[in-house]
Image (cartoon, rainbow, N blue to C red):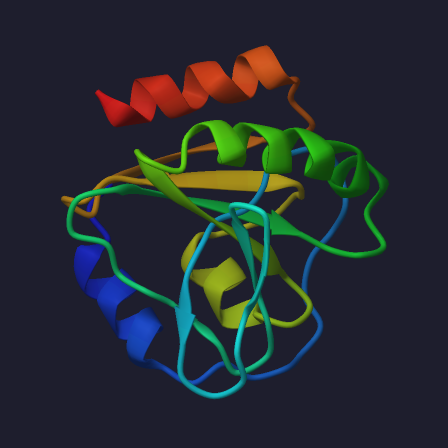
Length: 147
Protein backbone atom coordinates (compact mmCIF):
# COMPACT_ATOMS: atom_id res chain seq x y z
CA UNK A 1 0.00 0.00 0.00
CA UNK A 2 1.14 3.53 -0.67
CA UNK A 3 0.35 5.83 2.17
CA UNK A 4 3.24 8.27 2.03
CA UNK A 5 0.94 11.26 1.50
CA UNK A 6 -1.46 10.19 4.24
CA UNK A 7 1.41 9.37 6.57
CA UNK A 8 3.02 12.75 5.99
CA UNK A 9 -0.28 14.48 6.69
CA UNK A 10 -0.69 12.43 9.88
CA UNK A 11 2.79 13.45 11.00
CA UNK A 12 1.83 17.10 10.63
CA UNK A 13 -1.56 16.78 12.29
CA UNK A 14 -2.00 17.44 15.98
CA UNK A 15 -2.85 14.41 18.07
CA UNK A 16 -6.16 14.35 19.93
CA UNK A 17 -7.33 12.14 22.78
CA UNK A 18 -10.32 9.80 22.28
CA UNK A 19 -11.04 6.17 22.96
CA UNK A 20 -10.49 3.57 20.26
CA UNK A 21 -9.45 -0.09 19.90
CA UNK A 22 -10.31 -3.65 20.65
CA UNK A 23 -8.03 -6.26 22.09
CA UNK A 24 -7.26 -9.49 20.28
CA UNK A 25 -3.67 -10.35 19.29
CA UNK A 26 -1.06 -8.33 17.29
CA UNK A 27 2.31 -6.37 17.36
CA UNK A 28 4.22 -3.05 18.53
CA UNK A 29 6.74 0.06 18.84
CA UNK A 30 9.38 2.60 17.45
CA UNK A 31 11.66 5.71 18.00
CA UNK A 32 11.53 9.57 17.61
CA UNK A 33 8.99 12.35 18.18
CA UNK A 34 8.41 16.07 17.70
CA UNK A 35 5.91 18.81 18.54
CA UNK A 36 3.66 19.26 21.55
CA UNK A 37 4.55 17.10 24.49
CA UNK A 38 7.66 14.98 24.20
CA UNK A 39 7.90 11.27 23.71
CA UNK A 40 9.80 9.19 26.22
CA UNK A 41 12.43 6.74 25.05
CA UNK A 42 12.75 3.34 26.68
CA UNK A 43 15.92 1.82 25.30
CA UNK A 44 15.49 1.85 21.51
CA UNK A 45 11.73 2.41 21.62
CA UNK A 46 10.01 5.78 21.65
CA UNK A 47 6.69 5.79 23.46
CA UNK A 48 4.54 8.29 21.60
CA UNK A 49 2.91 10.51 24.20
CA UNK A 50 -0.06 12.82 23.88
CA UNK A 51 0.74 15.68 21.48
CA UNK A 52 3.86 13.99 20.07
CA UNK A 53 4.29 12.95 16.46
CA UNK A 54 6.23 10.31 14.59
CA UNK A 55 9.25 11.78 12.86
CA UNK A 56 9.46 10.85 9.16
CA UNK A 57 12.52 8.81 8.18
CA UNK A 58 14.15 8.96 4.75
CA UNK A 59 16.48 5.99 5.07
CA UNK A 60 15.24 3.71 7.84
CA UNK A 61 12.33 1.39 8.35
CA UNK A 62 9.74 2.72 10.82
CA UNK A 63 8.21 0.06 13.07
CA UNK A 64 5.07 1.09 14.97
CA UNK A 65 3.57 -1.05 17.70
CA UNK A 66 -0.12 -0.20 18.18
CA UNK A 67 -1.17 -1.24 21.67
CA UNK A 68 -3.13 -0.28 24.79
CA UNK A 69 -2.32 -0.42 28.49
CA UNK A 70 -5.35 -2.63 29.19
CA UNK A 71 -4.47 -5.21 26.49
CA UNK A 72 -2.95 -8.43 27.86
CA UNK A 73 -1.37 -9.61 24.58
CA UNK A 74 0.12 -6.11 24.15
CA UNK A 75 1.76 -6.30 27.58
CA UNK A 76 3.14 -9.76 26.75
CA UNK A 77 4.57 -8.53 23.42
CA UNK A 78 6.23 -5.39 24.89
CA UNK A 79 9.42 -7.10 26.19
CA UNK A 80 9.94 -8.80 22.82
CA UNK A 81 9.40 -5.50 21.02
CA UNK A 82 11.92 -3.75 23.30
CA UNK A 83 14.54 -6.48 22.92
CA UNK A 84 14.32 -6.69 19.14
CA UNK A 85 14.26 -2.89 18.81
CA UNK A 86 17.62 -2.79 20.59
CA UNK A 87 19.04 -5.21 18.04
CA UNK A 88 17.81 -3.24 15.00
CA UNK A 89 18.49 0.39 15.98
CA UNK A 90 20.92 0.87 13.09
CA UNK A 91 18.31 -0.25 10.53
CA UNK A 92 14.96 0.92 11.95
CA UNK A 93 13.25 3.29 14.36
CA UNK A 94 10.68 1.89 16.78
CA UNK A 95 7.56 3.56 18.21
CA UNK A 96 5.01 2.40 20.74
CA UNK A 97 1.60 3.95 20.07
CA UNK A 98 -1.27 3.64 22.51
CA UNK A 99 -4.45 3.55 20.41
CA UNK A 100 -6.42 5.27 23.19
CA UNK A 101 -4.08 8.27 23.08
CA UNK A 102 -3.61 8.33 19.27
CA UNK A 103 -6.89 7.19 17.68
CA UNK A 104 -6.15 9.12 14.46
CA UNK A 105 -3.00 7.05 13.82
CA UNK A 106 -4.90 3.87 14.63
CA UNK A 107 -7.57 4.91 12.13
CA UNK A 108 -4.97 5.81 9.49
CA UNK A 109 -3.52 2.30 9.72
CA UNK A 110 -6.97 0.69 10.03
CA UNK A 111 -6.16 -0.90 13.38
CA UNK A 112 -9.00 -3.21 14.35
CA UNK A 113 -7.16 -5.56 16.70
CA UNK A 114 -4.17 -5.07 18.92
CA UNK A 115 -1.37 -5.60 19.21
CA UNK A 116 -0.68 -4.62 15.62
CA UNK A 117 2.74 -3.74 14.22
CA UNK A 118 3.16 -1.62 11.08
CA UNK A 119 6.45 -1.78 9.14
CA UNK A 120 6.79 1.38 7.03
CA UNK A 121 9.50 1.48 4.36
CA UNK A 122 11.21 4.75 3.37
CA UNK A 123 9.20 4.78 0.11
CA UNK A 124 5.93 4.93 2.10
CA UNK A 125 4.76 1.38 1.49
CA UNK A 126 4.00 -0.74 4.52
CA UNK A 127 3.07 -4.16 5.78
CA UNK A 128 1.70 -5.19 9.14
CA UNK A 129 1.36 -8.08 11.52
CA UNK A 130 -1.65 -8.52 13.78
CA UNK A 131 -1.72 -10.49 16.98
CA UNK A 132 0.76 -11.67 19.55
CA UNK A 133 3.89 -12.92 17.77
CA UNK A 134 7.09 -14.38 19.17
CA UNK A 135 10.62 -13.02 18.75
CA UNK A 136 11.44 -15.23 15.75
CA UNK A 137 8.29 -14.15 13.89
CA UNK A 138 8.89 -10.49 14.75
CA UNK A 139 12.48 -10.60 13.50
CA UNK A 140 11.34 -12.35 10.30
CA UNK A 141 8.75 -9.60 9.70
CA UNK A 142 11.39 -6.90 10.18
CA UNK A 143 13.85 -8.66 7.86
CA UNK A 144 11.16 -9.02 5.19
CA UNK A 145 10.31 -5.31 5.47
CA UNK A 146 14.00 -4.35 5.21
CA UNK A 147 14.28 -6.02 1.77
